[in-house]
Image (cartoon, rainbow, N blue to C red):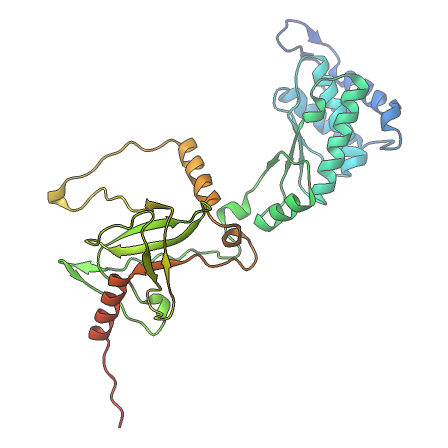
Length: 330
């Protein structure tokens, strides 16, 4: 598509009864001004005209929502200048462009260069806040990409995450298995040759123990009727299955992790209003911030410990020995 194929050329001014009769010519005027600007000399000479025509049609159809994909041809020599010409024309008739989207190439480099270009235009033409136009990045972004961008520096304001949001490539399926730990008041245990599949029997309570630096140290499971751990109290924490893995912990703070809402028909049901999305977001951020950085790093993270009390440890192994068959050799 070229400019001569754009049949509708007028655009109403924002918050006004006036009409810009030839918005297309206004864009061409601004593109010429960009090409002649001293501060932008050498950045570009000619831009792709079909791309400019597409941007123009987009802006005329949605003047309050103009966010352009600028990497169709060449980001810095065509996409960014074409976007800026349209954005400046919109600004002249009372609208504010949203920004750009980068969907390929070196996202860090292009975002930084685009920001420089926007800031140069703001200074050259005195267009307030043009330097702070939104820069969005997409292109199969995952956690590794985000980590790399943050380490090298960038000017991206928002990330468009699609594929890797709905499908985790490192673990495409999250397995979930329902295992009974008690039936009719009797604790039960599932045994397996695979130690990770052995269950921890009986109803339990779970607590998170925090250290003096504010980070979570360990999650501790105890039997339902055991007294809860207390801050400042020395607590023996044991690995559920490995006898030699144990440690005393003196927590600075103790947080209860389980909350029972339904304990059977005769016990009634506890009710609470659902928390707001903003509250859930803040809670998630607080929980993540309470984890040591080495637990949260993407490469070779330190495993976070989940332990059991001494009493629960003894019960697990008592039940395990009672339920496991004794082999016989001949």
